[in-house]
Length: 399
Image (tube, rainbow, N blue to C red):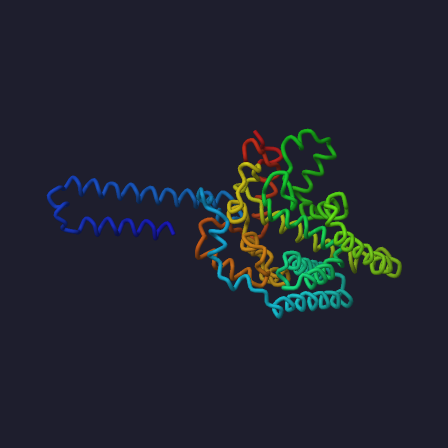
């Protein structure tokens, strides 16, 4: 991109100097000044491109760090550029995602039943990822993008999330709050960053827990979030209680009718083998997706007075590339920026939405590749968010 920009300006300089225009021929100084200006512009463009390249190099795991959105820009400016087709709900495609996930789970459990122990790590990686597909289907249901029928969305949402012991309705309510307040301090319910004063005022156990959840045990963070947000009726309005109670009751029923008999008949080892380890695999991806989608050294959390929707949803969300088999089993949930621009886009249309963003808003997109460099960057540079400095800091480098 830098080369193309520099070449265009240089070519313009050559063409202008070659034109025998009346206003230029008698005034060689004017020609020299014009060429000097063009040279300055060219140098500036090259310097900006090189600075951008250096910034990417200095941030391992990221392939592009999006530019801030212009002042005065609103969310609808972006949404109206998306093709109408990406909002279309297709029953066949929706139920196809169910078929893929169910087939993957059946295949994984069949392999677990007959495979030798040394293949278990691969099988559990597959099963945990396939189980995440259940959640993604429920995720579409929670946004009413699985079906045009509210009843179907409610039934399917509860059906696919209950085996994960994840209450559908409590999650739906809090998740929609996350979309309304993405990366907003205090208000975002997907997760809130630890703050320096919280870390400094915590005892040794509290500090150790913070270091663990924003460090080597990041993949367990969603378990704490699951327990904190989804089982307490006091966190919901009275008019929401009926559906909330239904989803919580479904999870308790699953525990009593499925998990308890599993524990009694198969023992603790069987319980761990058949349910707990796949469930932990699911939480690995829940924690990872949540962290990666909205965390980068250059993406701040903002106070309510500073926050704006388009800045948070377009330039404050990260598109991350994962291996194809993960995207397939998780129904492209990692193609996340279109989803934050409009929750009405079904999972099977996210890639088409992202293609449109690349054409129209590419310079504002944050792009990353999942792997050790990316996770190292996040887990070493984004431990605590300093609201006064408006930047992420590490646990041990806050000077």
